[in-house]
Length: 420
Image (tube, rainbow, N blue to C red; front, side):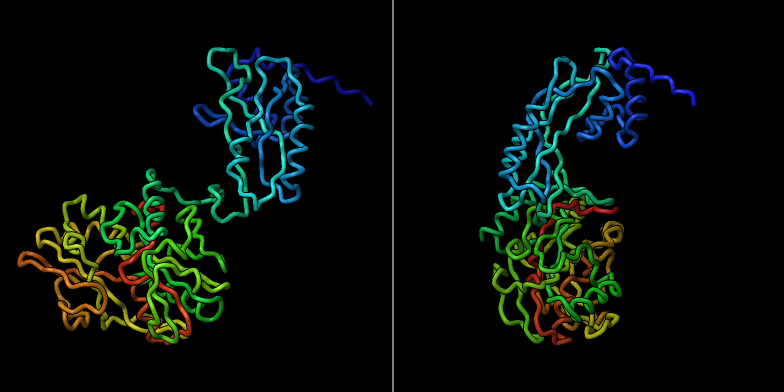
């Protein structure tokens, strides 16, 4: 049987930049270096493949990166660090650097165990013959069971607003009790959400089905894991028990009390639902020079019961609730054009100009919120409202529920035009 000829030795540093990229793709197909892309990371096994194919490819001695590993305690991680550093050897000035894990270690919660692994990255240096070079240390991505972890690794994960720190600062004000009012006109450009919390079981399933069947009144944008108050897909580091300005507690279909912190009422088997709110397009309306009368007058928006019947689901049934905005007659068409795009926030209006057509008896006496001025050149426009679930829960006499108080929304990190 003929022996195979030895593979030729490839001098990586003598290859062009294009040839280096092609070579790495051949050796490690899962790594796809591209022009302008962040440097990819390699694990120990991947480095071994590279070093076996590329003589002289070595790893510079440095700090190891921290990654999540439930099987290794943080105490053993410390021991592993020194051991692995002793194994790192290099005399090659163009070797790949080990990513520093010091920043990651400081940010990790003490509740979560971590393990150690060596991770390296490559970045061809322009005009240098393409040697693998060290760069500024970066934090390795971690995968944590922590619901507030910043790594949203699933396909289709949301893009957060480029100024998400503003929404987070606002939630801090809510959490500390500095802000307790309605959120109309607050954080324009960010999605706001209505909140419904039910114990796991029949009523939670019925409500999920209700949202699916009535997307105009209840455009569902997030459902938390059972027992979790953390809406990871909408707002990192948030807590639904404390980050809503005011909550309503319902028992057997009746409003029992309103509170500013729902922690002591939160059921262990909670299922939290977040529903898009029409406040989400306030920023777009202001950008089109369409006034927000309630915000101008420092009031909550007016909300009304209607004769518009929702499709029932299991134990839940009832009619739609609407909110009202007075809009200048010459800007009604623009208002409809803008709001109709926001299907995740109730979309376009259900009635323009006529309260009677939808069963609103007295426009000056809303069931929720505050009456606002309607000027002679303005038209009342009615949109489906996220208070609908509260009305449905009361009419259906659900044993227990937590909701936001009308007009007091949860402000997310997501831009209001999400999905447009």
